[in-house]
Amino acid sequence: MLECVKKCAGRNLEKEVEIQMAYITCKDLTLGYEGHAIVSDLNFKVSKGDYLCIVGENGTGKSTLIKTLLHLQDVISGDIITGDGLKAYEVGYLPQQTLVQRDFPASVREIVLSGCQSRCGWRPFYNKEEKMVAQRAMEKMMIQDLADQCYRELSGGQQQRVLLARALCAAQKILLLDEPVSGLDPRVTAEMYQLI
Image 1 (cartoon, helix red, strand yellow):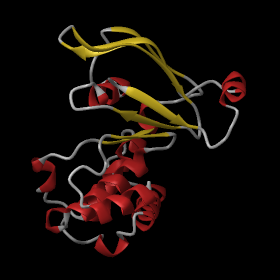
Image 2 (cartoon, one colour):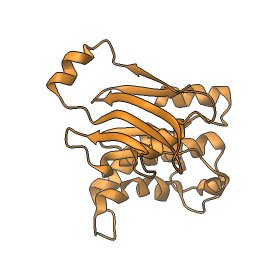
Image 3 (spheres, helix red, strand yellow):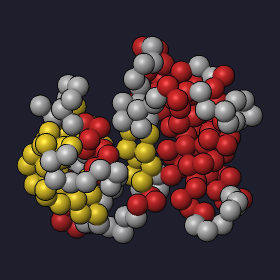
Image 4 (spheres, helix red, strand yellow):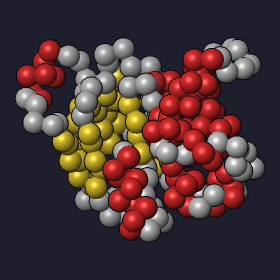
C-alpha cells in the first residue's frame, strides 16, 4: 500500500493551508496505466515548506504518482490542482537513474546548467544569472571541483549529486525526487539525505 508521510516542521498546517493556497492539491486521484488503477482515492496537499515522502513497496505507484504530478502520465480520474502561482517550469525533478543516463557524454557543468533550460524560453543560450544558479547548485552539492569532468567518468554517488544539482536548478518552488539514493552505498546514502 502507498502511504504519504508529511513533515511540517512543527507548524500548524491546517491554519497555514487556510491562509495560503497549496502548490499542489490532489483530490480523489486514481492513477495507473492503460486504464488499470494502481492507486485510488488519493487526497493530499503540498504547500510551501512541506516535505512529502511517498513510501511503499515496489509496484505500489510511487513513481507513477510522481510522473502523474509532472503530467508525464495521464490521470485515470480525480484532479491535480496547482495553486499559489505554481508553473510547470518551477518544478525540479530527479528521476530514477537508468544505465543510459550513467554513460552520458557531457561535462558536469553542462548537465547541471541544463537544469536551467526551462528558464531560457526562446533564448538559445544561458544568461549570467542562470550560470550563477548552476554554480550555486554545484557548490551546494560540493561538486564544483568536478565541473569540467565528464559525467560518465564519475562514481555513482558523484553522478547522483550532479543530477540533484541539475534538479535544484529547475526547482524554483518544488523538488520531486524519485528514489534519489537507489544503488548508493550506505555512506553516500547518508550524505545524500543530509544534502537533501
